[in-house]
Length: 550
Image (cartoon, rainbow, N blue to C red; front, top):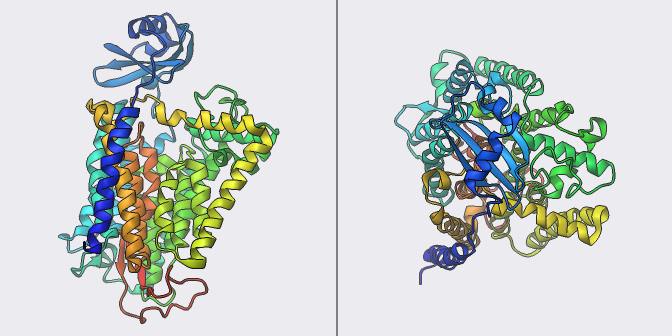
């Protein structure tokens, strides 16, 4: 049987085996009380009545958050105007007056139509190419389609927000997969749109303008992000958990309780915020979380620095690197994402640097393992990272993975002992069984098909890993690796139990390192890059000269 079919057959086998197993394991969270009773108890709460004042709500729905909490959502037509979390005894745990809030989370400035339009125009200028009839411009439009989920969520259409993201996510999934497998390159000649529009300027003047644009964007991010009046609950949870660690307590089971399931994240979500919590502890949602907002902004700027990294020998590399950084910062949803203080921006920085260090397996795997113990999803990339390695390089990568994992588990053990490990597993497991109105499967009424989608993702991971294993030349191309990593992360988001536009930060830098990269002129023979440590995973695999061309 030809080797090229091996990865496809493996992917199919994994899909066929995983689909029935996942289907059998599918079960909705048990509702603590009947839906009618939950709605009745919610309407008896003064806090809920105050949240509904002036909303003209027309319907209510009740669904389980977990076995102990029930969510009651109130709608005015298709727009959600309020929601409450109730315990089994009818006690209202938390109320959100969505209709009375200008934005769901983050700084209102980032949601303004003029700001989104301006960022979109800048994004097109930096990422687009001329002539317009190029595949690259379809990629740009697919990325800009992610503005719709932001706008819809701001207006309270939670289900509509997730469904609106599906066309763009689906397109990018296919494009990244094809690009990563070597079939998605656009070989037709093109010119960066910025260069085409500014062709009357000298190259040095173009670079000068790009530098000024980058500095201006960085300043805007700092001002909007750090001064944000509405951080997302994840930011509070990370800071509260870090504060507990500072006090010598394990976050699991010792959180203040003002954030529902605020302890459901891996241990490094909290541990990496310890230096910040040491200076600015967060004890509840009434505390200032400005330090956490600053971390998200710094992570966004660090990711811009990773995208700006370039090969010194490539002509036009400085301008290409600047365009790459500006493309990331001008991606319209990013300013809103960063202004929430979410940990997703920190994860984006980790993944960007992990790909940037791809040819240094130990360093790259260390970052990927840290990212996995920070947000779980990056663990899905581990098979792809290990697949092309051989011999000593494989051993050092595995050692890095084990070392980081041992350190994370050791921290949990030191803070909570054997019971702490059990508490962590129980808390993190909530992510696999929670109910959420922000699920495309629930919004479309096809939750029964979700296990099949999840099996497809497992098949994708297996097939991609086998392909990279059997074709090590592909692994020498960092842009392909970035594309395959983006495809897997996008697929994970599509089949997840809950989705929000905050998760876009995971893969946007990887798009910048793959779809938005063009081949540099042949300025050097394959393998002549002499930077220390910048070698392909396999010595027989040549390096390729690339510039970030966005």
